[in-house]
Image (cartoon, rainbow, N blue to C red; front, side, top):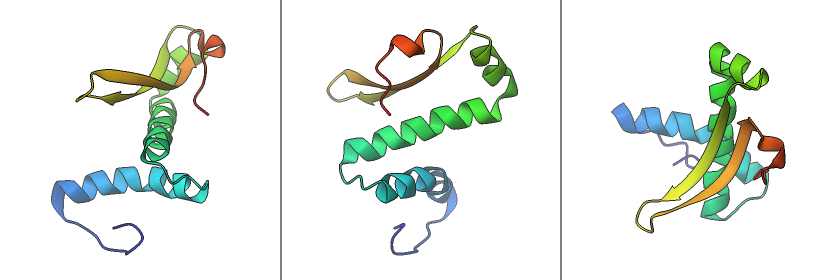
Length: 96
């Protein structure tokens, strides 16, 4: 839908508008794999949480909290680490 310029209505449109920036960023970075698009959206969402929540951003900056982004596969019962901001994230394998 993004590349065609088509729009949906209602709730679906809201979801598309929230996901589109991540899709476009992943595409411009040359990503083609579904997992890469998902990881980009997770990183984008973690960044948005920190940018839009002053309280959370301050707590992460002060070392009092962390935000961790995971990609889960419910059907498989698995989760994959993508990114983290905050407590001990320097020792984690950041997905960037």
